Length: 167
Image 1 (cartoon, rainbow, N blue to C red):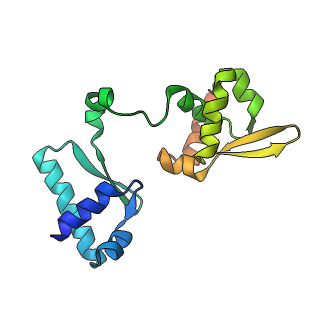
Image 2 (tube, helix red, strand yellow):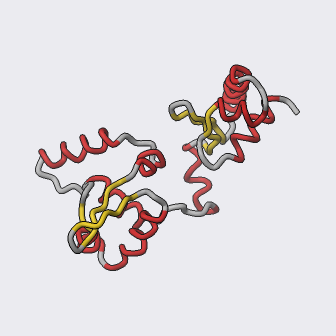
């Protein structure tokens, strides 16, 4: 088996982005060789017009579908997060420290299940506060959606300054 094939297999099988160092340990090859393989695989995907790409986030890599093919695969792919779950997560992210009642008032009783999912998946932390809970996005939320907390707060602050409601 070639190093490229083994690196590609690891990237394919990994659910989360993985570092070249971790791949190196798994396949018992030098990190420099793993990085070369990642670059070569990336080049080959681009050259062939593949629907796949290797996405780099910080020092980690992930084999994924090229975003331009998302609409094509939508009818056959399973949604990981429902539209209501996304709305609830977006509201909490834009309003860190909001209370559970705020979310239920905003989205109704149907928001209880998506909120429980967000807490279970560790996208949102829930902390007891008086007779309710304070809800805050977690590091996992920011990592999963590949956004920075500061960037999100700035957008929310800009909207607030413009007199818009943050949702």
